[in-house]
Length: 177
View 1 (tube, helix red, strand yellow):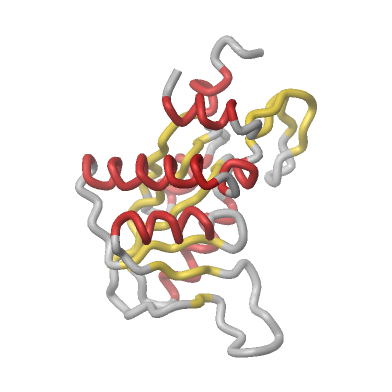
View 2: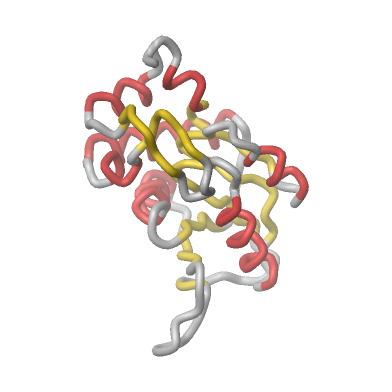
């Protein structure tokens, strides 16, 4: 069992039962990553493992991007672990304030690593990547804590983006069902 799988289990983020995912798909397990990302020990572990994976894969972005709300703690923690500034990508434009879809500084031409908590079909990730690209970002990789293996990798590949994950859903539930 991987270190991240153990941490997800210990903090209670891994749950079994009948669940409907954000994609609408049904599943007999759920990873409540928000439970994990609000636990400082687990959030720290996730950020350290992502930083190590960035080093191993030679990923050197100018910015990290988190998608509101789920991956913002992860983006902030990874930013602190690496010293790389981050931006926040909204799913929809607010009707007040600056009305921006991206909060934080983003310079056209910068290479951006998108981070996600859990990816199933990658629908919200593809949408966020589109917003980043419309604002001049170069996005070629996305890093997730968990790849549920629900077509997300293939959907991201259609957008020219490689999915890198810390763990796959099949590895997490192996022998648990």
